[in-house]
Length: 122
Image (cartoon, rainbow, N blue to C red; front, side, top):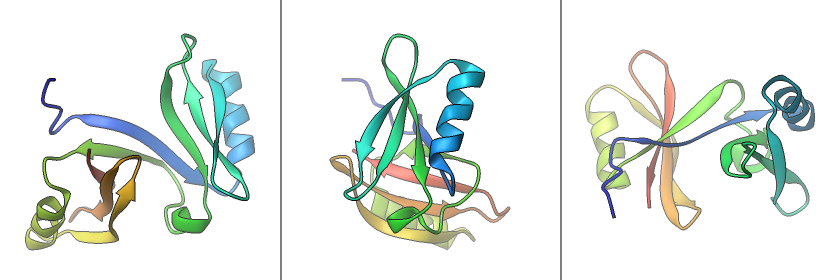
């Protein structure tokens, strides 16, 4: 298996109107979509023409309530706890604490310029 540390492993966005934004990208870029159950609602895995999931479009509620607007990249790291600590030590902020996601762990950070990114450890 190749090392994916430092690569962008996923991208998604959280918006108030996930259904409408899903339909927008289906019309504009030709993506398909698969529902991802979130319990009492569904988010969407957007798919390329070959059926491969390429991004996510999520409702800005539940654990995503504070992640509104814009695409969020997920950068693969070797140790998410160490990367979160390094973020804070270098002038950034952890805005979503480390927690489980898709068989791994992640957090969301804000860098000193104000940009956000997720850090993901498989």
